Structure formats: structure tokens, C-alpha cells
Figure (spheres, rainbow, N blue to C red):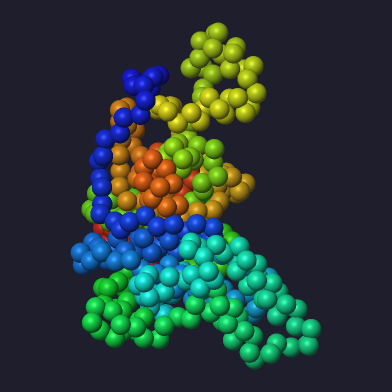
Amino acid sequence: MQPGQDTAYVFETLIEIPVTTVKDQHRSGTCWAFAGISFIEAEILRITGRDTDLSEMYIVRHAYEDKASGYVRMHGKSNFGPGGQAHDVTNVIRKAGIVPEAVYPGLSYGEEKHDHGELDAVLKGYLDAVVRKRGGRLTPVWHEAFAAILDVYLGKTPEKFDWDGKTLDPLSFAADLSIDPDSYVELTSYNAYPYYEMVKLEIPDNWSNDYYFNIPLNEFLEVIDHALLNGFTICWDGDVSDRGFSHKHGLAILPEKKLEDLDGTERARWEKLSESEKAGELYTFDKPVNEKQVDEALRREHFDNYTATDDHLMHLTGMVSDQNGTRYYVIKNSWDDNSNERGGYLYMSEAYLKLNTVAIMVHKSALPPALRKRLP
């Protein structure tokens, strides 16, 4: 046992990068939009010093229309749902711009917070009816009817709006924010793919079939640390279904209880515990624990067997350490600022991040110079 492991967590802030306030995705599967917009807002803050509040639902609305086109063209054989990836945010900004949250809150269905259960079911049901094409062929107006559903639930997107004394459209507003969508790159790290190449990451929410730069695990961690040390935040995509993830406790850890570390009496007691009782002892979240060692083989195993999936996106904004010197990455979630005692943030251990990160998005300038030169 390391010194300090028998006492409660004591954290020291190592890196704290300015970001915008925590938002709430509520009952919607749009974490990718909230994480991506939070990341873009932090980039605007870094580049211009401006504190902005951009519309997540404007991004969601446009992404839904693009997903629908692909789903219908693929005769219903592609993925259609509320999920997405960080590149969906930059892709929409490149194509359709962005607007402030106040201009397009996306709450035209009588709720104060986002609740997309009915919307998601209606959209999927409509598209499935279109794909079945009982008349023998598609009508030329199915897109318009789909857009009308989005208009009812989320509202019509503005062609022009007044902001800061100027009349703007979404593209001119985006240009005024000094954000270039082509300045960002997504990276992953799996030995299932060739390293130092752009690969099409095979995950369901990569519905647009975008490409990621695949690099070895040690360099993947170097990118994250280099970015943070140089004032860049990171859009994080990974798995939060692991039992070591507890937003309530503001922690994501990867405990490892080794029998060889126990004395005879404690070992005998441990072996008699049920699996749920063992898990309860492992995931107490009240003091530091030994954590698993993660390598590329273990990452590949968890990726291949669905243990680590891309079920959530969040925003990586800093770094802390505990009393034993273990590093944790500061993660801004999108489950409201009153959702835990850390104001909607959590600390993710390096071990958890190494195993459960599927991909990240960073500004290309955040990459170490030697790696940046290897980008295609």
C-alpha cells in the first residue's frame, strides 16, 4: 500500500484551463454536441478571450438532417440515432455555421430542459416508413417532411439574426468567432489499425465515416499532456459504463485488488466475498487505491469485446494529483453544474483514461511538433 492510501483523497491542482460554464444535456443523447460545443467555446476563449454560449441544438438539428440522408440512401442499413462524434460539431460549423444559444435554444416543445425521447422515436419511425417505400419509390418531399418534424420540436433555424448590433447569418457569425474547423484533428490509439495513418474508426456513432489519426498509446498520452501543458483543452470520447466511473463521486478510477497484496486472514475473507461484495469494496471512491496497469493489448481486448465503447463524450480541461502523486484528468461533463459536489466536473485517473478513451479531438497546434509533421 502506498503512503496516503489509508486516508481520504487530497487533490492538488496542476493545470486549470479557463472554460465556459457547465451545461445540461438532460434527457437527450446529445453529449457529443455538448462536449463538442464546450470544446469550441474553450477554443474561442483561448484564441480571442471571448466568453460565448453557443447553441448545441443548432448543431444537433443539422446533424440529424445529414444522418437522415445517409440512412435513407443506405436503405435503413446505416446508424440513425441521437449519438454522434466530435467531428459532427466541426462538420456542421464548416457547412452551416453556428448561432448563439439565445438565438436557437431548441426547446419548441414546451419543456424547459432537453427531453428527446419522443423526438428520437418520431424521427426514427418516420425514416423507417420512408425506407419501406410502399409506393415503390421515394417521394421527392420526404426531406421536407423530416425537416418539418425538426421544426416542430426544435424550432426553425434562423437565416439571419441580430447580435451585438450587427445582422448576421450563421456562417458569418461562425467566421467572426475565429474558429477554423479544418484546424482540428481526431486521434485514436488501437493496434487493430496501422499506426500513423488516418483510419476509419469502426464505432456506431461514426455515422459519417470520418477518419482519425491512429498513434501508439504512449504518444496518445503524450498528446493529451502536451496539449494541457500548453493551454489547449481536449474533446474526450470514451466509455463511462465501467464500474469505476462515478459522476456522483466525481471520480473515474480503475481499481485493482491483488490477492498477493493481502495477508492470510484478509485474503481468506476476500475470497469468500461474492462478486458484488468485492466490487463494493473496490469502488468505494473515498480514498486512493492501486489501479490496473494498462497497455495496448488490454485496450485492444476491451475495444474488441465491447467492454470499452464510445458511449459518452466530455471535455478534458485540466489535471490534478492526489497525495500519492497519481495524476487525474479534470473532466467537464454535461449533466448540469449541480449534478455532483464538483460542480458537474469529475477527476479521471490516468489508468481509467488509458483504458477507456476511444478518441480525442484537439487543435492541430496542440500536437507535439514531431507528431504534427506526421499528419497527412
